[in-house]
Image (tube, rainbow over all chains, first blue to last red; front, side, top):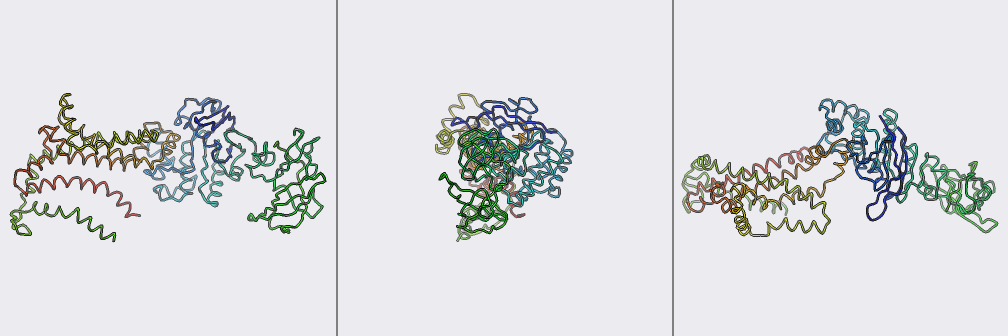
Length: 348
Length: 255
């Protein structure tokens, strides 16, 4: 059983300033929304408010349209998984997972039987009788997830649950979350500062900065059509080319690029993902540039180029992410092409 | 180096007990003999006399009562200190430490007048005074435990459906069980081994082991009885300490 979750004009003030300001966000039933932002952006506070562990200074939290004001955490049916697994050290793995059933008054036998099913789901049934201290970090977090799911929550909140795991374990956990979503279809709100994690796990991403939601949209939209330069930077976008918008096109050293029809006329930044650009032979792209830096990134290389000065004297720089090792060197000149049908501008 | 200090420390604790143990089993022991001339079980038999049995029960009741009062109060005090701003919490800590700074005799004399005036029964009066003396120990035992206590355990429990009472019973108390045992043990020791408060506030009506030991040591000249009573005072706390330490030792050995 999963539910929708809505925040309506939620604010939180801790006395020294607003941590959250007028947050409005809807998470549809069975969807996964990632709250992405830097430390101190207010994302964990929003999660605590949803869980009932903190109260908003203003605004409402609604589950299936029902206002949760005054409903204590234990009656909300919302489970929270923290970054630290926080398994109860005085209970073994099975009894940790059986905790919520025991609290709801079920017998020890029934609670354990149900808990075992959830341990099976996270592939840790063989560890049922171990003490939490005898598990690895990844196993502990799996048990923590199983314990939260055993609550049969209407909504599952994940507060950076995988950030302390190594990269391989994270990949395993992502696969586990996919499994859980396909089997149980819970509504999930994921807090993370890792844009890749947000993109892999969530259906949509809400970008938070200084207590405000800057943009909420599908994963591709926030990457390729950022509402502001701050969203572009939060999502790892490296290219912001100054220029101006005129008659539906952005004009800059990069040329005259068609942009979104509703773009405001006047100064604006052309936002081009480094992944959407390609290096081509000189004079075969939209613009030429001189390579200033080559940064290996595993299977990709990030090439930074200084654009040739345009006829109006303006210039700029671009980053291009290419597959493998490109056939260019620092100081060399290459053409840059843009494959998109249209560009995207964001206000400065 | 460390081993040498360890041995010296062990000797410092154990050496005074050796003459006691010898006196406990001695029949006759005259100077300048190094060991008793004859041995006897009279000391052991004395320990089972009704008078000493009754004193042991009174001491145990006193120690347990002090532990029952001072342990929860210590937890509440530690929780309160934790929630207070730092400047306020320092002040409360100093107030709680005051019983350690005031000489027990002065403290007890002051309390005695007050307790007599409000007609407090002697046992309850002694428990009350000793609970105050035990409070610094219990508070600081919980204070150090709470310093490493993660409140998010309770938050997780609440999101898993536990109400306030269930969170207390199934999360907070089990997580603080070790600190509770240590605090209760210290408070028990305060009640079990007390002499001054029991003598002055109990007004002679409370016959505890330390009181009988005191009078035996002062006037009886019966070294065997004195040694038997001394060991009776020392023994139970050592047994309790061993019982408290056993689970942790077992855990360490298993690792």
